[in-house]
Amino acid sequence: MSDSETVPAATHPEAPGGAPALPQEALRIAAGYAFGGPALDLGALLWDGRCLPDAQVRIPLPMLTRHGLVAGATGTGKTKTLQLIAEQLSAQGVPVFLADVKGDVSGVSAPGLPNDKIRSRAAEVHQQWTATGFPAEFYALGGIGQGVPLRATVTSFGPVLLAKVLQLNQTQEQSLGLIFHYADTKGLELIDLKDLRAVVAFLTSDEGRAELKAIGGLSTATAGVILRALTAFEAQGMGPFFGEPEFDTAELLRTAEDGRGLVSVLELPAVQDKPQLFSTFLMWLLADLFHDLPEVGDVERPKLVFFFDEAHLLFNGASKAFLDSITQTVRLIRSKGVGVFFVTQTPKDVPGDVLAQLGNRVQHALRAFTPDDQKALRATVRTFPDSGYDLEELLTDLGTGEAVVTVLSERGAPTPVAATRLRAPESLMGPIDAAALNGAVTSSPLFGRYAQAVDRESAYERLEAVKARRPAPEAEPESRAAKGAPRREESVVEQVVGSGMFKSLARSIGTQIGREITRSIFGTARRRR
Image 1 (tube, rainbow, N blue to C red):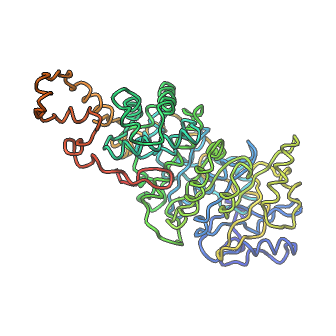
Image 2: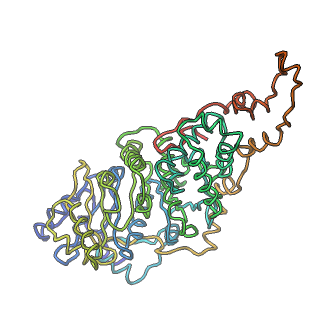
Image 3: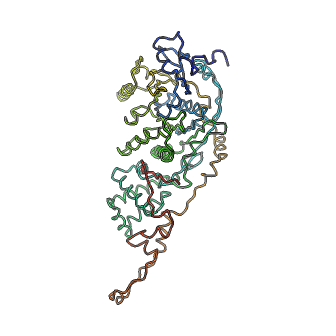
């Protein structure tokens, strides 16, 4: 390491954050980032076309639970920024969750390869760059692609999130909620899609129409629409994402034996053509964490930092109720020690109520080629605090690996806006090879727990069993009926298929039956699997 790459005193937490030789405005900005406690180092201040390595731009570690936004046009370096932040969080013992949409984040597990660009960047920003790999776990939705299979049961996924995936309208979403309520109260466990399809099919059958009427507010026509949407959804190959063993989101909170935080990477390239599914599945992960984690208030170190990539997909076409649920989850999960960063192209992709809760901002370059681009640029500028920069010009001139930053200080106040030349990640900036990825997956202690799908008895099997066991109707002798003679006691099967469907099923199948599941913000099940 050359002398030019040695970290100067000004980069240490106890330093004032800037040298006297810096311009006055640059000194003011640098002072806003001179934190005394643990922090993540993002890079060096850019001012008047120069990189000022004595003015370091940082994020206080406790403020990561105040959430954040990483935005910028394609190709401006958002993924490398995520990698840089994930590395430093891991190094400080904080677990991280990353969604790898393009398939190039797996390199976080391997040491980076030094080259002239990295050496030059490290020298510019006074970074002591050391090639380092970080402990990582790789997941794949439903086992499609390389990764430990990540599944959810239909019942825990809940009606609100499922309606988003099925692209149902508001009326149909409410009707789906009634169907879940019916299945919950009757003890019909909805493990996979065929379970839900079986329940809806029963409710639209001759035998089940009486049950459908008893629910109230659910028409046969709407139930039919939901059934067709489910059938089409399953035909598109969506079945593997729902089932057992269901993933326990507590796995995301682990640390490695050396104390570093585990970086959980959800590999998504194999499902890039299913954007609604993976964005909604990410929301399920977050909602499930919210349900299970205890309240901890403000913490010195986050329990988990969750990066929500391609965030615009979650918000596109979302109902007001759905957006309200997202807003509530983001607002409340902070008190459980979890930070959430949304990653997208422009801040306008994120609704205002959610954007208002994102205290940390890393804004990469924006393009302004069209009138719509220019409008988005002006809207982005308005979301920043006042600054000494001409942000409208700056945001179109930033190079790759540069960003405009404002975060929350240790006191919770916004820091000055700082144009920043970002540090280089120390892990591999690109994917590891397929053999190494496969080896990491199969050697994981979680592989044996989640790799093999399990199809146990649930709603589909129970309804099929009832159908198969139903006796043919018996004609009663007219004289007996006329005399009012007592009928023989009905069997359990006859009780099940009669108009009072499932009234006695609780006595015949087990303690889960007949006990309604408690659901929360997104209609997700709060009962621990």
